[in-house]
Length: 101
Image (tube, rainbow, N blue to C red):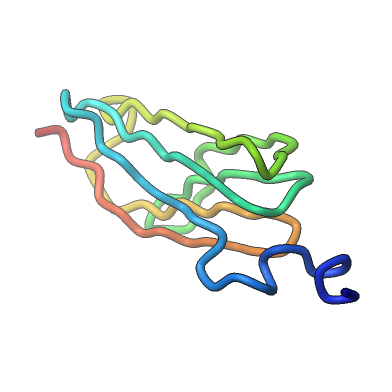
């Protein structure tokens, strides 16, 4: 019972945190749907390939909810980017390409 109370669901289930990216059908935006079993402060950060932080969002997450971040692709130059999502207990990194097709 100490593991459950102290570690929560993330210690009992494999792949319990999820970070999914969906590209809209119009292809002009990226939607980052963020789900986590961790409650508390979360953040989304977008970096260029050179490591420059260009976007940052923060929110207080509750496990029964999800958060969506929408990036309008035409607002960013074509290139390689990395999205980082941080929760109190996890960090996810996702490299991707923005194109204007």
